Image (cartoon, rainbow, N blue to C red; front, side, top):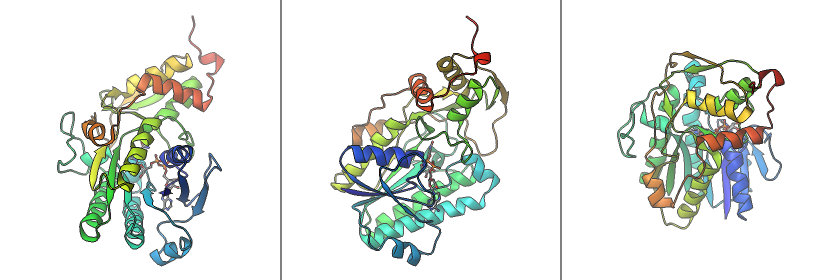
Length: 314
Ligand SMILES: NC(=O)c1ccc[n+]([C@@H]2O[C@H](COP(=O)([O-])OP(=O)(O)OC[C@H]3O[C@@H](n4cnc5c(N)ncnc54)[C@H](O)[C@@H]3O)[C@@H](O)[C@H]2O)c1
């Protein structure tokens, strides 16, 4: 099977592409920047904000059986500061949906738990109406709506995944994109204090291998016609606070968990624990790495050593 992955130089894209290659699939990446982590697959350097004719021209000699659309501005807070980028997210999703329609291929869309708004536990059934909390959230809701409309009007087979706080590998390019787990690893290792926005915030952190295992299962089911036009949560079904995260990172590094607490920032959800029953049922998905263990793996992968001055005294 040939899989085109947009956003293939990013965290989930890189992990997914490598997993597909290891499974013997052909992968073509598409991203507007080169892949900083690996040269194992080819990347078409292209901006999905270009006019469609230009995108089609650049891909004229390329073929694929499934298109996985992950390209986006992927950070909630960044889009609170730059709301115009939420429109760019919608435009990239439109470009991906059009490509799928014109080539007659199925489409997988990387959405987010942000599509739920701030709903709390037990209210995460996939079909519930949604409220946008932030421009990022709005861009994912609009993307999901577009994708579903392409299924309805043009018969494009689609799958939408709602991811949640994916961490673990190919995610510590902090100068490009600040993510909480690699940020805590870097700062606590150096003996610096981290800021926790929202003491009581509870989130569902997903180890990246679990995330891409679900997407891989979805790609296969979609390509074989076993599944279509579903929206599926991918996470662990377990909630952790940012204080838990700081403690686990500190334990893995052997340092003190030094943090101060500030209120949640605008646009941030305060509680999300996914219902993963649908992923289990439709994809045979079962998360295998929970936060404490996942953080140990993430620290090992990053190769970060604690500053000797920051180490805990015995
Ligand atoms: N990582 C998470 O925790 C998480 C959670 C929920 C949803 N998501 C969604 O999953 C997808 C992948 O996330 P990620 O963490 O790998 O993000 P990422 O930022 O690491 O990767 C996104 C990639 O898309 C590329 N890109 C952005 N705009 C583009 C454009 N116009 N044309 C071409 N390439 C473009 C970027 O260069 C980047 O390499 C995103 O859609 C994100 O919103 C991620």
